[in-house]
Image 1 (tube, protein in one colour):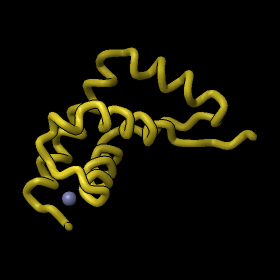
Image 2: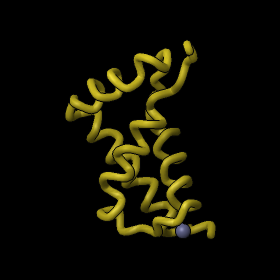
Image 3: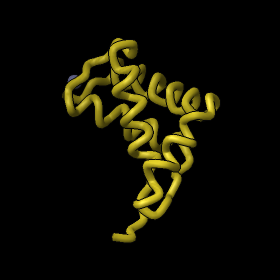
Image 4: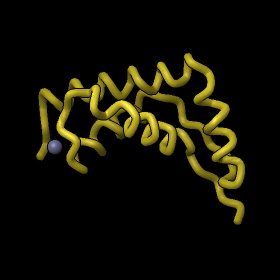
Amino acid sequence: MCDYKNIMEDMVEQVYDKIKDQLDCCQCQCCRNDIIAYALNQLPPHYVVSHEGKLYAKMYLMKEQHSMDITSALTKGAMLVREHPRH
Ligand SMILES: [Zn+2]
């Protein structure tokens, strides 16, 4: 199967799951999606063809600057959601 995919979505979800306990924010599905959507709007999309996705994501996140960018976008999103929870 050859399909394209924005792997930034997977990476943001991965980082979210790693740091969600430090975000000090509601972790229900709705708030989680709000935070992730906010972060994704801050970050550049990264499209790859799906079979390359896993490897590419691994390499991308190995760069500390990249994980830091994602972490800070998620942190900002969490701050906004904490102030205006939608649930
Ligand atoms: Zn919530």
